[in-house]
Length: 311
Image (cartoon, rainbow, N blue to C red; front, side):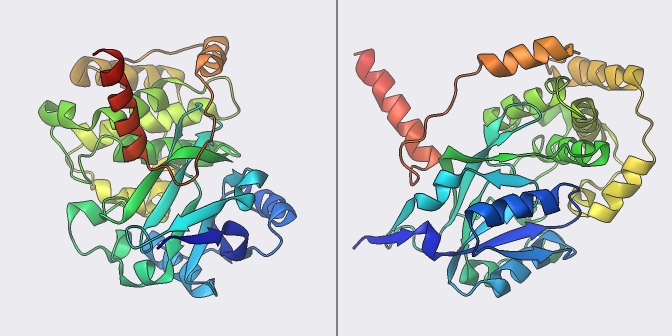
């Protein structure tokens, strides 16, 4: 039996930490979702999500990151729930203002309090590769296809660098596991595609070059610095130390790019701002149809359609 759930009937939790644009984004969220609540400044990703769950009065709730601005239309949508997905987490795609990517990073999500109560991730990891820096490898975690928000992780140079660095680290892992440079090509093709964009695109927006630098540095440290513990990517205090010790020189960014190109066969270019902007404008826009369409189902539809056309 299918249950129809109005998103506007769910609690909405705005989860912020030290994002320099969090107050501005919070004010925007309250203008379109005045029932929203805020949880701020909790240390640790697992602990912060547990605090968000504790703040919700509804078993299922909407979670919005401090650097995210939802589309107002999102709150007019409905979720369709049945025995196959009633305990699942849904993560919708977000548009990234730096590089134009549209994927789950920074996107709106919907959790259940029970799911969060029982999870052990990040600083509370159960020790498995899948939970040490991520939430997304649980079988009940559903990546959804459509885009319902925009993420703005570039309000400061530090924020943009951190966004790039974190994705640089995580996108070159395999199910949360660190790989050797020789095994890098075994990473999922979707991650490699997104990683290439982080490493190249963004010079046309404020602090975008810091995001590119951070992404290149994150990949370099993960793949070639055996003395660095990549799980530090979950510790924002340690990221602040790395940022403070980094010299942001254009020639160093170019050197990192050359190393990644030569040793990992990544396509690295130092695009001028005009080229970066043109590339983002040339990408096709998403047109939302069904809020409940999972990424895996969309891929199946595309595959089946292609097979039909080529018969």
